[in-house]
Length: 252
Image (cartoon, rainbow, N blue to C red; front, side, top):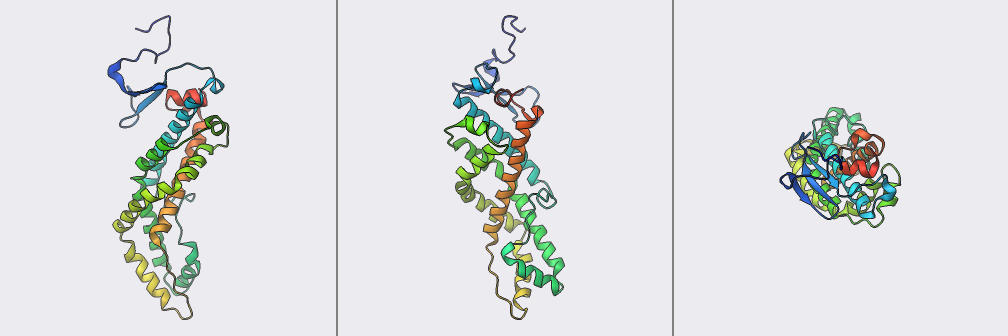
């Protein structure tokens, strides 16, 4: 029964329901989870608005928002056509090989070009299945000094900060996953005929594309774009604030 002198639902959580805790908040498994291992991150202090929040609480809220966003972005990008039919993140034929693409279409290899682009996006969708844990690790290790300035910044301020501060390390851990995905979709089968066909066209300059690098960069770019949209949603839509900490930092 709830204590009439303390109407807060979260002030007296039983230890058996705790997954983890620190000085600022505790983690509790949700009684009605919307997905596997769905947890609530609940602060240990009541405040009326974010001006009363400590910098550590704001940073925890920002990281929570990014974590929720990464989970949603990863799920969205990893389904069939998650990249291929989303014009915001679809991976096109490499720009540095634009002349190659145009020449191949002129000699009747347009279908092969389209097939290559499709498989390129299938590889990104496959890699996205394993992206969330890497992004979550980057979020956890991200160092933030002034959380309030990010909170009061642009709709994608937290995403931009994450991208700037962790992109190089994320690339290093994500590239092997992309390379594996490219092997899974057998990208060489689709690229080699294009390169061979193009090299047979008179007066053309051979193109040497690092497909692993290109796909990694574009897949990461797409995931960050989706994450930015998720952050914007959390900032603007109360229903997207799925934990007590998010409600505390971004408002009810």
